[in-house]
Amino acid sequence: MKPKDPLEVFVRYPDGKERFTGHACGTCGILSSVTSFIGTEEELTKLTKDAATRCCNPTCRVCGKQTERYHKLCSECRHKQFNERARLEEEQRRAKAEKVSYVDYKGGGVFLDDRFFESVGDVLEHCECDAVDPPQDVWGAIEIPFCLDADHVVDNALDDHHDGAGDDLSNASVKELQELLDGWCQKQGIVSYEADWSTLVIMPEPESDDDEEAADPS
Ligand SMILES: [Zn+2]
Ligand SMILES: [Zn+2]
Image (cartoon, rainbow, N blue to C red; front, side, top):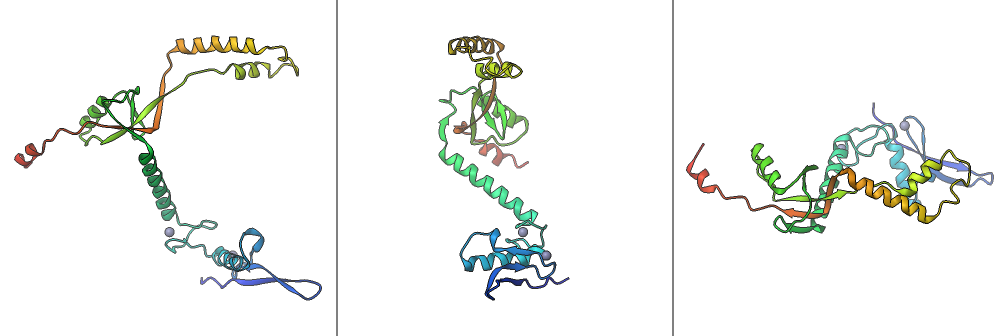
């Protein structure tokens, strides 16, 4: 079915004057009102006309293909846009990151594609196992602290008590609890890492085996 052209909609005031209020879908009549948008009069005319045109015939703004209602882009273009954004973010992150040679890197591990490795050596081993070229760089890793917050612990414990039950708790006693908690946490030896997006660890140069490859055509 060919979509019908959008219709201009005006309201008439008692004094006979008419005011433009938007565009209605030519097919189903739903109004795209100027109140839904922000812009100059000219922009509002264009925006409401566009919305009304797309109402029963939503098309992708990039490729023009039919798309789901209320979507500006088709799923393919949405996907592309998402990937492109992720790529740009990664590019910016890489540009900003401090580059550290693996020799000088002092962190407790590295990340390759969201996977943690205890060392650059482990990354090389993993790549060799999977028969893939090792990356030129990997992300650094930072330890996620394992800790309990005394204020939270106390607040939780006071939840079922009467109002003001904790008023007499002094800062010093909360501090004392914090020290106990810190000591306890440390004893548990729980260590996890997350990627350090501010540090790129430069991997060792791959050993050249061009000569071997040239000599061995297989
Ligand atoms: Zn419609
Ligand atoms: Zn598209």
